[in-house]
Length: 56
Ligand SMILES: [Zn+2]
Image (cartoon, rainbow, N blue to C red; front, top):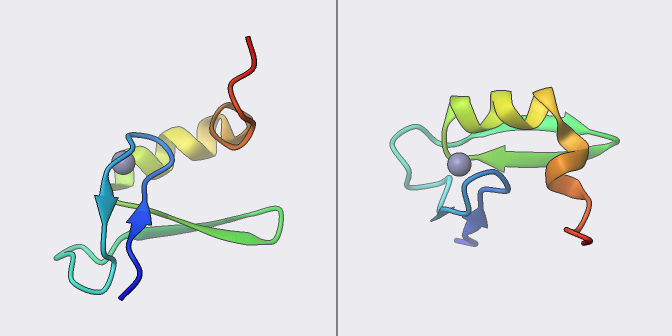
C-alpha cells in the first residue's frame, strides 16, 4: 500500500495499516491525509502554511 507523508509533522505512515487509519481533509478539491487529528487541525487552521513550498 502507498505510504502517506503527513504534511504537518512529516511522519510517513500507511493509512491502511495505521491503527487510526489517518485523518482526511479536503482542501481545494484534493484530499489530504494526516497521521493525527492534531495535525489535521493545524492544517485546517492554516492550510497555506503547509501547501505552499517554503520560500525564504
Ligand atoms: Zn502529522
